[in-house]
Length: 490
Image 1 (spheres, rainbow, N blue to C red):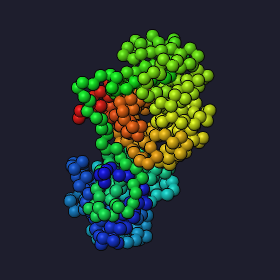
Image 2: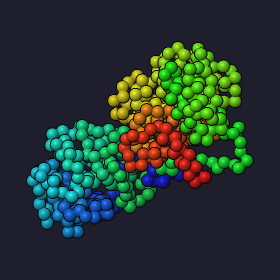
Image 3: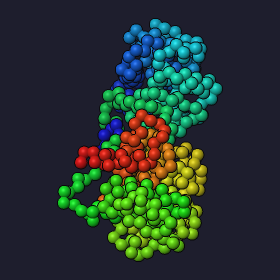
Image 4: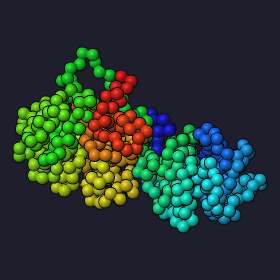
Protein backbone atom coordinates (compact mmCIF):
# COMPACT_ATOMS: atom_id res chain seq x y z
CA UNK A 1 0.00 0.00 0.00
CA UNK A 2 1.26 3.53 -0.75
CA UNK A 3 2.18 5.63 2.26
CA UNK A 4 -0.09 8.51 3.16
CA UNK A 5 2.49 11.08 2.10
CA UNK A 6 2.52 9.68 -1.43
CA UNK A 7 -1.24 10.00 -1.96
CA UNK A 8 -2.64 13.12 -3.65
CA UNK A 9 -6.13 14.42 -2.97
CA UNK A 10 -8.46 17.11 -4.21
CA UNK A 11 -8.82 20.22 -2.03
CA UNK A 12 -12.44 19.21 -1.43
CA UNK A 13 -11.30 15.87 0.00
CA UNK A 14 -8.84 17.64 2.29
CA UNK A 15 -11.57 19.95 3.56
CA UNK A 16 -13.68 16.90 4.38
CA UNK A 17 -10.72 15.39 6.23
CA UNK A 18 -10.48 18.60 8.25
CA UNK A 19 -14.23 18.47 8.98
CA UNK A 20 -14.03 14.85 10.13
CA UNK A 21 -11.10 15.56 12.41
CA UNK A 22 -13.06 18.36 14.06
CA UNK A 23 -16.58 16.94 14.19
CA UNK A 24 -16.06 13.17 14.28
CA UNK A 25 -12.88 12.99 16.36
CA UNK A 26 -13.26 15.98 18.63
CA UNK A 27 -10.15 17.91 17.64
CA UNK A 28 -11.00 21.63 17.91
CA UNK A 29 -10.38 23.57 14.74
CA UNK A 30 -8.29 26.09 16.62
CA UNK A 31 -6.09 23.26 17.89
CA UNK A 32 -5.40 22.23 14.28
CA UNK A 33 -4.69 25.87 13.45
CA UNK A 34 -2.18 26.18 16.29
CA UNK A 35 -0.49 22.95 15.22
CA UNK A 36 -0.18 24.31 11.69
CA UNK A 37 1.26 27.58 12.96
CA UNK A 38 3.87 25.80 15.04
CA UNK A 39 4.92 23.64 12.09
CA UNK A 40 5.43 26.72 9.90
CA UNK A 41 7.37 28.53 12.61
CA UNK A 42 9.63 25.49 13.08
CA UNK A 43 10.25 25.41 9.32
CA UNK A 44 11.07 29.11 9.35
CA UNK A 45 13.53 28.78 12.25
CA UNK A 46 15.22 25.74 10.75
CA UNK A 47 15.62 27.15 7.24
CA UNK A 48 16.20 30.84 8.05
CA UNK A 49 17.90 30.85 11.47
CA UNK A 50 19.32 34.34 10.92
CA UNK A 51 15.92 35.90 10.22
CA UNK A 52 14.94 38.67 12.64
CA UNK A 53 12.08 40.44 10.87
CA UNK A 54 9.01 38.63 9.56
CA UNK A 55 6.18 39.93 7.39
CA UNK A 56 2.96 37.93 7.51
CA UNK A 57 0.40 38.58 4.76
CA UNK A 58 -3.11 37.49 5.76
CA UNK A 59 -6.28 37.18 3.73
CA UNK A 60 -9.58 35.62 4.73
CA UNK A 61 -10.64 32.24 6.07
CA UNK A 62 -8.57 29.65 7.88
CA UNK A 63 -5.47 30.39 5.79
CA UNK A 64 -5.46 33.86 7.39
CA UNK A 65 -6.05 32.24 10.78
CA UNK A 66 -2.89 30.18 10.29
CA UNK A 67 -1.07 33.42 9.49
CA UNK A 68 -2.16 35.12 12.72
CA UNK A 69 -1.11 32.08 14.75
CA UNK A 70 2.30 32.10 13.05
CA UNK A 71 2.66 35.82 13.76
CA UNK A 72 1.84 35.37 17.45
CA UNK A 73 4.21 32.41 17.86
CA UNK A 74 7.01 34.23 16.03
CA UNK A 75 6.57 37.27 18.24
CA UNK A 76 6.76 35.06 21.33
CA UNK A 77 10.09 33.75 20.03
CA UNK A 78 11.44 37.30 19.95
CA UNK A 79 11.11 37.98 16.22
CA UNK A 80 10.01 41.35 14.91
CA UNK A 81 6.66 40.69 13.23
CA UNK A 82 4.50 42.83 10.96
CA UNK A 83 1.08 41.63 9.82
CA UNK A 84 -0.75 43.02 6.79
CA UNK A 85 -4.39 42.04 6.27
CA UNK A 86 -5.91 42.27 2.82
CA UNK A 87 -9.42 42.10 4.27
CA UNK A 88 -11.15 43.82 7.15
CA UNK A 89 -10.35 41.44 10.05
CA UNK A 90 -13.77 42.18 11.55
CA UNK A 91 -15.20 40.02 8.76
CA UNK A 92 -13.26 36.95 9.93
CA UNK A 93 -15.28 34.19 11.52
CA UNK A 94 -14.79 31.10 13.66
CA UNK A 95 -11.25 29.89 14.30
CA UNK A 96 -9.74 32.55 12.04
CA UNK A 97 -11.45 35.24 14.10
CA UNK A 98 -10.11 33.70 17.31
CA UNK A 99 -6.60 33.59 15.88
CA UNK A 100 -6.82 37.26 14.92
CA UNK A 101 -8.10 38.28 18.34
CA UNK A 102 -5.27 36.43 20.07
CA UNK A 103 -2.79 38.26 17.86
CA UNK A 104 -4.51 41.59 18.49
CA UNK A 105 -4.14 41.14 22.27
CA UNK A 106 -0.43 41.95 21.97
CA UNK A 107 -0.02 43.69 18.62
CA UNK A 108 -1.80 45.56 15.88
CA UNK A 109 -2.02 45.24 12.14
CA UNK A 110 0.44 47.16 10.04
CA UNK A 111 -0.66 49.53 7.32
CA UNK A 112 -0.70 48.00 3.84
CA UNK A 113 2.65 49.58 3.13
CA UNK A 114 4.79 47.86 0.55
CA UNK A 115 7.94 49.24 2.21
CA UNK A 116 7.47 46.47 4.78
CA UNK A 117 8.70 44.05 2.12
CA UNK A 118 12.14 45.65 1.95
CA UNK A 119 12.56 45.38 5.74
CA UNK A 120 11.46 41.74 5.99
CA UNK A 121 13.93 38.87 6.20
CA UNK A 122 11.20 36.32 5.45
CA UNK A 123 7.65 36.68 4.12
CA UNK A 124 4.84 34.37 5.23
CA UNK A 125 2.13 33.96 2.58
CA UNK A 126 -1.22 33.32 4.28
CA UNK A 127 -3.38 35.27 1.83
CA UNK A 128 -5.32 32.72 -0.19
CA UNK A 129 -5.88 29.06 0.57
CA UNK A 130 -7.24 26.06 -1.29
CA UNK A 131 -10.72 27.49 -1.78
CA UNK A 132 -9.70 29.89 -4.56
CA UNK A 133 -12.14 29.65 -7.49
CA UNK A 134 -11.53 32.75 -9.60
CA UNK A 135 -8.57 34.77 -10.79
CA UNK A 136 -6.90 37.05 -8.27
CA UNK A 137 -7.27 40.72 -9.06
CA UNK A 138 -6.80 44.22 -7.68
CA UNK A 139 -5.06 44.43 -4.27
CA UNK A 140 -4.52 40.66 -4.10
CA UNK A 141 -2.67 40.60 -7.40
CA UNK A 142 -0.72 43.73 -6.48
CA UNK A 143 0.65 42.13 -3.32
CA UNK A 144 1.43 38.85 -5.05
CA UNK A 145 3.39 40.73 -7.71
CA UNK A 146 5.16 42.82 -5.06
CA UNK A 147 6.21 39.71 -3.13
CA UNK A 148 7.49 37.99 -6.26
CA UNK A 149 9.43 41.10 -7.23
CA UNK A 150 10.91 41.52 -3.75
CA UNK A 151 13.32 38.58 -4.10
CA UNK A 152 12.78 37.81 -0.39
CA UNK A 153 12.41 34.24 0.91
CA UNK A 154 8.76 33.21 1.02
CA UNK A 155 7.08 30.46 3.00
CA UNK A 156 3.59 29.67 1.69
CA UNK A 157 1.01 28.36 4.14
CA UNK A 158 -0.74 25.24 2.77
CA UNK A 159 -0.67 26.47 -0.86
CA UNK A 160 0.95 29.47 -2.59
CA UNK A 161 -1.66 32.19 -2.96
CA UNK A 162 -3.12 32.19 -6.48
CA UNK A 163 -2.28 28.57 -7.25
CA UNK A 164 -5.20 26.22 -7.95
CA UNK A 165 -4.58 23.36 -5.52
CA UNK A 166 -6.57 20.97 -7.71
CA UNK A 167 -5.06 21.53 -11.15
CA UNK A 168 -1.78 23.33 -10.50
CA UNK A 169 -2.79 26.26 -12.70
CA UNK A 170 -2.17 29.91 -11.83
CA UNK A 171 -5.34 31.90 -11.25
CA UNK A 172 -4.20 35.21 -12.72
CA UNK A 173 -1.11 35.52 -10.52
CA UNK A 174 0.51 33.29 -7.90
CA UNK A 175 3.17 33.47 -5.24
CA UNK A 176 6.50 31.89 -6.13
CA UNK A 177 7.44 30.40 -2.77
CA UNK A 178 10.76 29.02 -1.62
CA UNK A 179 8.98 26.61 0.71
CA UNK A 180 5.35 25.51 0.91
CA UNK A 181 4.20 23.89 4.13
CA UNK A 182 1.02 21.94 3.46
CA UNK A 183 -1.26 20.21 5.94
CA UNK A 184 -3.62 17.25 6.53
CA UNK A 185 -3.03 15.68 3.07
CA UNK A 186 -1.12 16.48 -0.12
CA UNK A 187 -3.07 18.44 -2.72
CA UNK A 188 -2.75 17.20 -6.30
CA UNK A 189 -2.17 20.60 -7.88
CA UNK A 190 1.02 21.20 -5.94
CA UNK A 191 2.85 18.61 -8.04
CA UNK A 192 2.00 19.28 -11.69
CA UNK A 193 1.53 22.12 -14.20
CA UNK A 194 2.73 25.31 -12.41
CA UNK A 195 2.54 23.71 -8.98
CA UNK A 196 6.19 22.76 -8.65
CA UNK A 197 7.34 26.16 -9.90
CA UNK A 198 5.16 28.01 -7.37
CA UNK A 199 5.70 25.77 -4.35
CA UNK A 200 9.45 25.43 -4.17
CA UNK A 201 10.29 22.79 -1.56
CA UNK A 202 7.14 21.10 -0.27
CA UNK A 203 6.99 20.12 3.41
CA UNK A 204 4.03 18.05 4.58
CA UNK A 205 2.56 17.65 8.06
CA UNK A 206 -0.61 15.70 8.84
CA UNK A 207 -1.19 17.76 12.02
CA UNK A 208 -1.59 14.40 13.80
CA UNK A 209 -5.15 13.84 12.60
CA UNK A 210 -6.40 10.23 13.01
CA UNK A 211 -5.38 8.00 10.11
CA UNK A 212 -8.90 6.57 9.95
CA UNK A 213 -10.23 9.78 8.41
CA UNK A 214 -8.35 9.05 5.17
CA UNK A 215 -10.38 5.91 4.56
CA UNK A 216 -13.39 7.97 3.51
CA UNK A 217 -11.83 9.50 0.38
CA UNK A 218 -10.23 8.09 -2.76
CA UNK A 219 -6.98 9.81 -3.73
CA UNK A 220 -6.89 11.41 -7.17
CA UNK A 221 -3.33 10.24 -7.84
CA UNK A 222 -0.18 8.83 -6.30
CA UNK A 223 3.17 10.57 -6.08
CA UNK A 224 5.82 8.20 -7.44
CA UNK A 225 8.28 8.57 -4.59
CA UNK A 226 9.76 5.10 -5.05
CA UNK A 227 11.14 6.21 -8.40
CA UNK A 228 11.85 2.87 -10.01
CA UNK A 229 12.01 -0.81 -9.16
CA UNK A 230 13.83 -3.15 -11.55
CA UNK A 231 14.39 -6.86 -11.02
CA UNK A 232 17.93 -8.06 -10.41
CA UNK A 233 19.70 -9.45 -13.47
CA UNK A 234 21.06 -13.00 -13.40
CA UNK A 235 24.81 -13.44 -13.79
CA UNK A 236 24.29 -16.03 -16.54
CA UNK A 237 22.00 -13.81 -18.63
CA UNK A 238 22.63 -13.04 -22.30
CA UNK A 239 21.38 -10.39 -24.73
CA UNK A 240 18.57 -12.57 -26.02
CA UNK A 241 17.01 -12.55 -22.57
CA UNK A 242 16.67 -8.76 -22.46
CA UNK A 243 14.58 -8.00 -25.47
CA UNK A 244 14.90 -6.38 -28.86
CA UNK A 245 13.84 -2.76 -29.38
CA UNK A 246 13.03 -1.51 -32.87
CA UNK A 247 13.27 2.29 -33.19
CA UNK A 248 11.52 3.75 -36.24
CA UNK A 249 11.95 7.36 -37.34
CA UNK A 250 14.65 9.72 -38.50
CA UNK A 251 13.10 11.18 -41.62
CA UNK A 252 15.08 13.47 -43.90
CA UNK A 253 17.33 15.75 -41.87
CA UNK A 254 16.41 14.21 -38.50
CA UNK A 255 18.80 11.32 -37.74
CA UNK A 256 19.56 12.65 -34.28
CA UNK A 257 16.17 11.67 -32.88
CA UNK A 258 16.56 7.95 -33.58
CA UNK A 259 20.17 8.07 -32.42
CA UNK A 260 19.08 9.44 -29.05
CA UNK A 261 16.27 6.90 -28.71
CA UNK A 262 18.53 3.99 -29.65
CA UNK A 263 21.30 5.03 -27.28
CA UNK A 264 18.80 5.53 -24.45
CA UNK A 265 17.35 2.06 -25.03
CA UNK A 266 20.80 0.48 -24.87
CA UNK A 267 21.77 2.39 -21.74
CA UNK A 268 18.49 1.26 -20.17
CA UNK A 269 19.40 -2.40 -20.57
CA UNK A 270 17.80 -3.56 -23.82
CA UNK A 271 19.59 -6.64 -25.17
CA UNK A 272 19.43 -5.51 -28.78
CA UNK A 273 18.37 -2.36 -30.59
CA UNK A 274 17.60 -1.93 -34.28
CA UNK A 275 16.87 1.30 -36.12
CA UNK A 276 14.83 1.83 -39.27
CA UNK A 277 15.45 5.22 -40.83
CA UNK A 278 16.05 6.99 -44.15
CA UNK A 279 18.83 5.25 -46.15
CA UNK A 280 20.86 8.43 -46.16
CA UNK A 281 21.10 8.34 -42.37
CA UNK A 282 22.55 4.84 -42.05
CA UNK A 283 26.14 6.02 -41.76
CA UNK A 284 25.30 8.74 -39.22
CA UNK A 285 23.42 6.30 -36.99
CA UNK A 286 26.10 3.64 -37.27
CA UNK A 287 28.82 6.09 -36.26
CA UNK A 288 26.88 7.67 -33.38
CA UNK A 289 25.55 4.35 -32.05
CA UNK A 290 27.67 1.44 -33.32
CA UNK A 291 25.95 -0.95 -30.89
CA UNK A 292 22.67 -0.64 -32.81
CA UNK A 293 21.74 -2.43 -36.04
CA UNK A 294 20.57 0.11 -38.62
CA UNK A 295 18.47 -0.38 -41.74
CA UNK A 296 17.28 1.99 -44.44
CA UNK A 297 13.72 2.15 -45.73
CA UNK A 298 13.40 3.77 -49.14
CA UNK A 299 9.63 4.02 -49.52
CA UNK A 300 8.48 3.53 -45.96
CA UNK A 301 8.39 -0.23 -46.33
CA UNK A 302 9.05 -2.32 -43.24
CA UNK A 303 10.66 -5.55 -44.44
CA UNK A 304 9.58 -8.71 -42.64
CA UNK A 305 13.17 -9.57 -41.76
CA UNK A 306 13.45 -6.32 -39.77
CA UNK A 307 10.70 -7.25 -37.32
CA UNK A 308 11.76 -10.81 -36.60
CA UNK A 309 12.22 -11.34 -32.86
CA UNK A 310 11.34 -7.71 -32.10
CA UNK A 311 9.95 -7.25 -28.57
CA UNK A 312 8.70 -3.67 -28.82
CA UNK A 313 8.53 -0.85 -31.36
CA UNK A 314 9.38 2.75 -30.50
CA UNK A 315 8.07 4.93 -33.30
CA UNK A 316 7.93 8.68 -33.69
CA UNK A 317 11.35 10.24 -33.01
CA UNK A 318 12.09 12.36 -36.09
CA UNK A 319 9.43 10.44 -38.02
CA UNK A 320 7.92 13.35 -39.91
CA UNK A 321 4.40 13.43 -41.33
CA UNK A 322 4.86 12.61 -45.01
CA UNK A 323 3.84 9.47 -46.93
CA UNK A 324 7.03 7.68 -45.84
CA UNK A 325 6.22 8.27 -42.20
CA UNK A 326 2.53 7.37 -42.54
CA UNK A 327 3.33 4.10 -44.29
CA UNK A 328 5.78 3.07 -41.58
CA UNK A 329 3.30 3.95 -38.86
CA UNK A 330 0.46 1.93 -40.36
CA UNK A 331 2.69 -1.09 -40.97
CA UNK A 332 4.00 -0.93 -37.40
CA UNK A 333 0.49 -0.80 -35.95
CA UNK A 334 -0.55 -3.82 -38.02
CA UNK A 335 2.18 -5.97 -36.43
CA UNK A 336 0.26 -5.97 -33.13
CA UNK A 337 3.51 -5.69 -31.15
CA UNK A 338 3.81 -3.54 -28.00
CA UNK A 339 4.45 0.03 -29.07
CA UNK A 340 5.81 3.26 -27.62
CA UNK A 341 4.39 6.16 -29.65
CA UNK A 342 5.79 9.66 -29.49
CA UNK A 343 6.33 12.87 -31.44
CA UNK A 344 5.20 12.71 -35.09
CA UNK A 345 3.65 9.28 -34.62
CA UNK A 346 1.18 11.02 -32.31
CA UNK A 347 0.71 13.90 -34.73
CA UNK A 348 -0.07 11.46 -37.55
CA UNK A 349 -2.50 9.57 -35.32
CA UNK A 350 -4.31 12.83 -34.61
CA UNK A 351 -4.19 14.02 -38.23
CA UNK A 352 -5.35 10.72 -39.77
CA UNK A 353 -7.70 9.79 -36.91
CA UNK A 354 -5.91 6.46 -36.41
CA UNK A 355 -7.16 4.09 -33.72
CA UNK A 356 -4.41 1.98 -32.14
CA UNK A 357 -5.41 -1.63 -31.47
CA UNK A 358 -1.95 -2.91 -30.50
CA UNK A 359 -0.88 -2.67 -26.84
CA UNK A 360 0.74 0.72 -26.55
CA UNK A 361 2.14 3.59 -24.52
CA UNK A 362 1.70 7.16 -25.76
CA UNK A 363 4.01 9.90 -24.50
CA UNK A 364 2.62 13.26 -25.68
CA UNK A 365 3.76 16.65 -24.53
CA UNK A 366 0.90 19.15 -24.00
CA UNK A 367 0.92 20.29 -27.65
CA UNK A 368 0.67 16.73 -28.98
CA UNK A 369 -1.98 15.93 -26.38
CA UNK A 370 -3.97 18.93 -27.58
CA UNK A 371 -3.87 17.70 -31.18
CA UNK A 372 -5.01 14.23 -30.12
CA UNK A 373 -7.89 15.76 -28.15
CA UNK A 374 -8.79 18.35 -30.82
CA UNK A 375 -8.24 21.21 -28.42
CA UNK A 376 -5.38 23.56 -27.56
CA UNK A 377 -2.41 23.48 -25.21
CA UNK A 378 -3.99 25.98 -22.83
CA UNK A 379 -6.97 23.67 -22.31
CA UNK A 380 -4.71 20.67 -21.68
CA UNK A 381 -2.60 22.54 -19.13
CA UNK A 382 -5.71 23.97 -17.44
CA UNK A 383 -6.50 20.50 -16.08
CA UNK A 384 -3.82 17.93 -16.79
CA UNK A 385 -5.57 15.27 -14.70
CA UNK A 386 -8.70 15.58 -16.83
CA UNK A 387 -6.67 15.71 -20.05
CA UNK A 388 -4.83 12.44 -19.40
CA UNK A 389 -8.08 10.68 -18.56
CA UNK A 390 -9.58 11.90 -21.83
CA UNK A 391 -6.51 10.68 -23.70
CA UNK A 392 -7.03 7.23 -22.24
CA UNK A 393 -10.72 7.32 -23.17
CA UNK A 394 -9.63 8.13 -26.72
CA UNK A 395 -6.97 5.43 -27.26
CA UNK A 396 -7.18 3.09 -24.21
CA UNK A 397 -3.43 2.57 -23.90
CA UNK A 398 -1.10 3.72 -21.14
CA UNK A 399 -0.81 7.51 -21.31
CA UNK A 400 2.16 9.64 -20.32
CA UNK A 401 1.43 13.38 -20.30
CA UNK A 402 4.85 15.00 -20.19
CA UNK A 403 5.71 18.26 -18.51
CA UNK A 404 6.41 19.56 -15.03
CA UNK A 405 4.93 16.82 -12.88
CA UNK A 406 4.59 14.23 -15.67
CA UNK A 407 1.40 12.16 -15.34
CA UNK A 408 1.05 8.44 -16.10
CA UNK A 409 -2.39 6.80 -16.40
CA UNK A 410 -3.27 3.24 -17.33
CA UNK A 411 -7.02 3.53 -16.90
CA UNK A 412 -6.93 2.71 -13.21
CA UNK A 413 -3.87 4.16 -11.46
CA UNK A 414 -2.75 7.74 -12.00
CA UNK A 415 0.85 8.50 -11.03
CA UNK A 416 2.67 11.82 -10.77
CA UNK A 417 6.44 11.97 -11.23
CA UNK A 418 8.07 14.23 -8.61
CA UNK A 419 11.44 14.35 -10.39
CA UNK A 420 12.77 16.42 -13.28
CA UNK A 421 13.89 20.02 -13.71
CA UNK A 422 13.59 22.99 -16.09
CA UNK A 423 16.96 22.26 -17.73
CA UNK A 424 15.26 19.25 -19.35
CA UNK A 425 13.07 21.55 -21.45
CA UNK A 426 15.20 21.04 -24.55
CA UNK A 427 15.02 19.18 -27.84
CA UNK A 428 15.65 15.44 -27.76
CA UNK A 429 14.43 14.71 -24.23
CA UNK A 430 11.28 13.02 -25.51
CA UNK A 431 13.34 10.80 -27.81
CA UNK A 432 15.41 9.68 -24.83
CA UNK A 433 12.26 8.90 -22.83
CA UNK A 434 10.88 6.78 -25.69
CA UNK A 435 14.08 4.73 -25.72
CA UNK A 436 14.06 4.23 -21.95
CA UNK A 437 10.44 3.07 -21.82
CA UNK A 438 10.82 0.79 -24.84
CA UNK A 439 13.87 -0.88 -23.25
CA UNK A 440 11.91 -1.63 -20.09
CA UNK A 441 9.08 -3.18 -22.09
CA UNK A 442 11.66 -5.27 -23.96
CA UNK A 443 13.01 -6.52 -20.62
CA UNK A 444 9.65 -7.87 -19.59
CA UNK A 445 7.90 -5.08 -17.76
CA UNK A 446 4.18 -4.58 -18.27
CA UNK A 447 3.25 -1.41 -20.14
CA UNK A 448 2.12 0.43 -17.03
CA UNK A 449 5.25 -0.61 -15.12
CA UNK A 450 7.51 0.43 -17.99
CA UNK A 451 5.82 3.81 -18.36
CA UNK A 452 5.94 4.60 -14.65
CA UNK A 453 9.48 3.33 -14.15
CA UNK A 454 10.76 4.84 -17.38
CA UNK A 455 9.43 8.29 -16.62
CA UNK A 456 11.07 8.26 -13.19
CA UNK A 457 14.41 6.94 -14.47
CA UNK A 458 14.45 9.57 -17.22
CA UNK A 459 13.62 12.39 -14.79
CA UNK A 460 16.14 11.25 -12.18
CA UNK A 461 18.83 11.00 -14.84
CA UNK A 462 17.91 14.54 -15.86
CA UNK A 463 18.30 15.70 -12.27
CA UNK A 464 21.76 14.14 -12.08
CA UNK A 465 22.78 15.70 -15.38
CA UNK A 466 21.53 19.15 -14.37
CA UNK A 467 22.71 19.28 -10.77
CA UNK A 468 21.84 22.82 -9.71
CA UNK A 469 21.76 24.16 -13.28
CA UNK A 470 18.48 25.31 -14.83
CA UNK A 471 19.62 25.47 -18.46
CA UNK A 472 22.24 24.12 -20.83
CA UNK A 473 21.70 20.37 -20.31
CA UNK A 474 21.71 18.23 -23.47
CA UNK A 475 19.57 15.16 -24.07
CA UNK A 476 22.76 13.18 -24.72
CA UNK A 477 24.03 14.17 -21.25
CA UNK A 478 20.90 12.66 -19.70
CA UNK A 479 21.59 9.39 -21.53
CA UNK A 480 25.00 9.26 -19.88
CA UNK A 481 23.34 9.33 -16.44
CA UNK A 482 20.80 6.58 -17.11
CA UNK A 483 23.13 3.69 -16.31
CA UNK A 484 23.88 5.00 -12.82
CA UNK A 485 20.19 5.61 -12.07
CA UNK A 486 18.99 2.30 -13.42
CA UNK A 487 21.58 0.35 -11.44
CA UNK A 488 20.91 2.02 -8.09
CA UNK A 489 20.15 -0.68 -5.55
CA UNK A 490 20.92 -3.54 -7.94
